[in-house]
Amino acid sequence: MQFCALFAVWLAVFAGAFELARTLLVELYMYPISYVAAWILNGIGVQAALGNALLTSGVCQLAVSDVVYLVTFECTGIFALFMCASSVLAYPASKVSKIKGISLVLPAFLAYSTLRLVVMGVVARFIPDHIELFHVYIMVLVNIGFVLLLWLYWVREMVPGSERA
Amino acid sequence: MLSIQLLECAAIAGRGVLLGLLSISIVAVSALLPLGLQWLLS
Image (cartoon, rainbow over all chains, first blue to last red):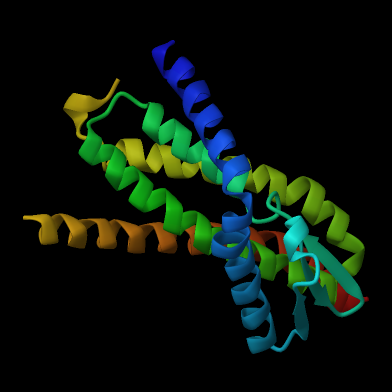
């Protein structure tokens, strides 16, 4: 019960911080992820171009073949990251374990979100008919699974047995 | 002491990156393989 309440509190804290630092997060989180994804796509032979004309509105344009993705915060998994970080911070573990958890979750999401955009780029290039399937169904389910995987991995591998609830 | 803890955090971060890459790669391969085969055969 305490975990649920703390989880909600941390989510609210992240939501507030997100609203306050939206512009900063565009530059520090969304654009770098989109940039690296476009770079990887070009590296593997899929022509991709990144547009930053709508960056002030919090949107990146990732053009792959005939498809132009409007990359938003949702696409970069930032809200799933907030969920995962909240579940780490709300868990009744020591501060050291929580620092380890955030050290695990943040880079994991950066890598995951970048490769997720690359996968969407590959889908747009080779099987554009399935964009909807991947974007709306598969990736959403995978996001939830990834949050659970990371949290459970942290609890099992990094939180000492004596601290587990 | 602090440097050891920083090193430990860096190692954990590396593990996080690997977990992230591995997870989405497994999903990509398992989801794209059948569709790729379908695309090749069509």
